[in-house]
Image (cartoon, rainbow, N blue to C red; front, side):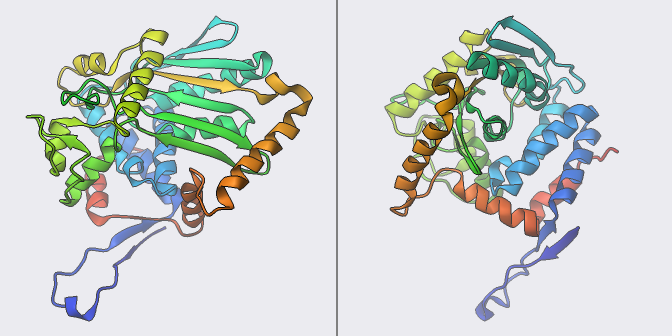
Length: 357
């Protein structure tokens, strides 16, 4: 289902240029569109299905910077030769509690899909297990991955570097990637507790959305190429982003570099940018995912201890504070019922991409 709607304007604005209506799509229509455009861009059907699922999840949950806008990012990486479009992930077991998937230069989504069943099995058998995705291309959020693992009753963490776009605290030259950290906790009978945040002050996609909309960014989001604070999103994209929380975010960014770089035999953000060779493609490198079975620590008392966690969550919510991911879940319920609205200019850009069947 596709429809249009235009935001209402006050009478005083009636002489202003007509606002272009958003394009309204059902989630099924959005998924079909994303899948067709990814196949049209050259992705194999298996990769297209996995990547489309992640994009639709972002749009469904109100995360515009990680939603269908990322279709343009993926298509750009494909066009620039930064992605192996028909890569076949290779799953191996380097140790009893470890899984490795060599993504062979393809997008990370299919590699995770192929490695997830063995990760879940090992976590339940050993109590804790880790999955290393190597040689994969990243462009999306991590929360869909950890949320799936929490849905299987596991506690999950995920880490990945990116391209060197972010300056360390006290510096103005890029060293780190946006280096997100994601965490998920299973909640019996409820949606999992999930957070996913970049260690940069903001996601890079958010700066790009400001650039597309012609809007300035706060002056603490980044520096221009000369190392000066700026509100120009294009200047930040060409210069350096900042970490969140000063030295604390900077330390966490370094941790992500180490965990999902040298620890698993993959690239740092600086190495990823060098490997890109100025093609302008999405980051390529590694991702580390850790899955923990609570029953591995507390055995048959797991239900009791999960209920203790619910008391913690209640202590947060009872004073009016919001749990991370609650806003996403609310957006999800609306989208499942009403579909999503895509800005007309973004929809036009998407429709310019070739389609496949």
